[in-house]
Structure formats: C-alpha cells, structure tokens
Image (cartoon, rainbow over all chains, first blue to last red; front, side, top):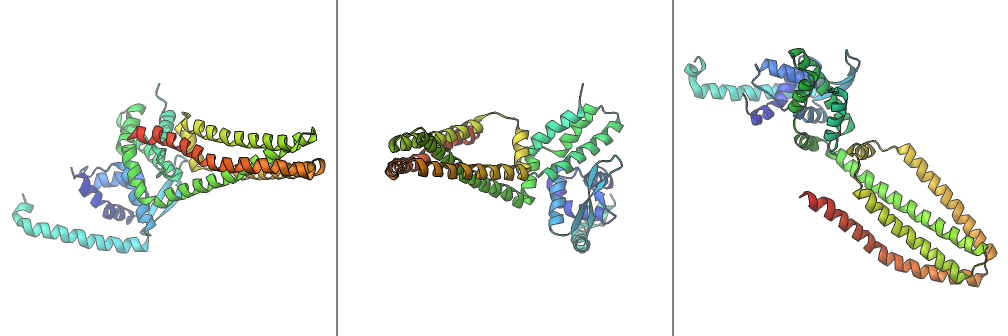
Length: 112
Length: 232
C-alpha cells in the first residue's frame, strides 16, 4: 500500500492522466486510480475534490454539470490545453525520478 | 429500518457545518456517496453497510473541511464580509425603527395633551427599552440550541429577495411613522414644550450612547466565554 504522503504527492499527475483519456467525474476517477494501481493507491476520497477544484482554479481542467443515467446531476471534469502541457511536465519529472531509482537499484533488483 | 435518504441528510448536515464547504461542493460530495453506495451494494453489502463504508472512504468531516479550506478561501471571506455588511444594515434599520417608535410615542402623548417633559421622558424610556430588548434578543438568539442545518442554510443561501423586501418595508414604515410623528408634534405641541422634550431626549441619548457599547460588550463577552472558551 502506498503511504498517504506519496498518494497525495502523486494526486495531480494521476488526475491529469485519467482526464487525458476523456472527461470523467470524481467517483469514477477514484475507481480508475484504484484499478490502475492494482489497489495500491487508496485515497481518502474526500481529498480528491479539493485537488480537482485547485486544478480548475489553475485552469488545468474545466468542469461542467451533466445529467447522469439515474437522472441526477454529476460534476464532470475535462482536461484543458494548459492541463495537457502540465501533464507533459509531470510525466518528465516522474519518469526522471523513476529512472534515478532504477539506476541506483541496478538491473538485478528490477528483475527480482 | 435503515433509511438511506435520512442518513444522507444527517451526513450532509455534519459535513456542511464547515464554512469552507460550499453548497455546490456538498452536492458533489453527496453524488459521490450515492455513486459509492450504488457500487457497494452490488458487492453483497446491505444499504446500511454500503453507506457506512462509503462515508468512511470519503473521510472525516474535519479532515475534509481542512482540505476544502485551502481552495475555498475566497468563499469563506465572502461569507464573512456578507455577514458584516448584513450586521451593519441591520443596525441602521434598527436605529430607524427606534426613531419611528420614539416619535410615535411622543406623538401619542402629544395627542392626549401631555407636556414636553412627559413626552421626552416617555420617548427616552421607550428608546432605552428597545436597546435593552435588542441586547437580550441577540444573547438569547445566540445561546438557543437549534438544528445546525437551519443556521447553515441561512449562511449558505441568504434569501436576498426576502431580506431586501423586509428592509424596504422597514424603511417605508419607519419613514411614514417618523413624518407622521413629526407632523403631529409640530401641529399640537407648542415650541417651548417641543424644546423641553428634545432636551430630555438629547440627555438620554448621550447616556444611551455611553451605556450601549458597554452593554453589547457584556453580551459579546458572555457569548465568547460560552462558545469559544468552552470548546478549547
């Protein structure tokens, strides 16, 4: 299980990556993160919304209300152009962290 | 029997108590819990179990509120400024009400042929009673136990139309009473008696303006002791 701090630190690139695949709403984003991480990343779900709202304030994502199949209104989010650029930067940064760790651990650790 | 709608309402009240969470955020969180419950009941959990798991996953109200506080700063200050201005408007309206009540009482004394001294005295007493009444009303209103939802609803959805209508009605009614009062006094009371009455009222007003801040400080002092220190 990924510790809370690391889950929080990776919340932005995770959200942006999921929205890069298409518009989505809060509960579904959490489900996708859970699936993609094989259950390793469990958020305190309420904390996703402040992250989404902050990203929206920064113009990285846009939100809109849409009626769901049950007739209730759901808030959807989609990536903006700024968000796409920001995701590229996140990607470079996380990959370089990843590469650094791989270099330090050496190939034998990776294949264990 | 577990009622999901009631449980959701109760949960929303608990979450919505924080000024950091706007009604629109609450709607989004509510939909989240509904989605979560809908998903969890398919995994052989009962409604109640699904609901408990869903709200547990959302997190503790305090924790959520502190996360929201970081993004909703402007909203929090907007609410505070709103209530400061509302307090100011209320104060101005209250002064209007007092003027209209004291002038009406003067006019009534004048109509039954009272002297300037009695007019001034009665008006002073009426005015003092109004201020004391306000201090008591504020204190009682603040200490009354009430459903947190009603206060939160008031805070989050100020019914501006109703408030404006009430304020407008108070202004119109006060204006009418003040003008009518002044006309009656001017018509039925000799100038010397009006002077006496005004003199007494001026004296009592000076006294009230000295005492009123002390009274309201006392009210605030008590409220502060009751609510702020009791919690810490």
